[in-house]
Image (cartoon, rainbow, N blue to C red; front, side, top):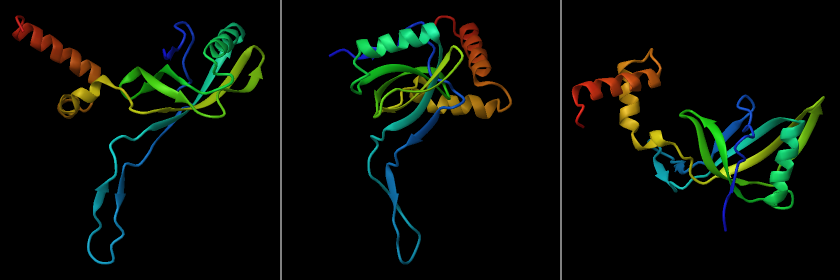
Length: 163
């Protein structure tokens, strides 16, 4: 079974009204005496997003056609959705949760939809290099991380061009 992909030319969810909740993967003991201790339950914690979309009339028609092709009008399912996170725009594999995509309003030719989706594991390429990201920030706290990374690229390419 193939997983549906978000249409290339359809804008993704609105970032100003997107919320994210992550399931707790640990418990804190309720001890009678002494400091509480933390117990890890699982590292496999899903992340839930409440998302909204705004489409003009032609985008809304394409969106409804995409839903119909992938049977999202009758059932939930997995699909790839571009979502803005701290790293930037990343494509996440998400599950559409009940009640699915809901048309929440129309203002002239602008249609609004909402949905709740779940991702099993939020994907970000920065997660592979957390020490580097923190190091770039701590060495240049007032600069943008992208600027700092670009300076690092230049420094490495000039000092180690053969690397």
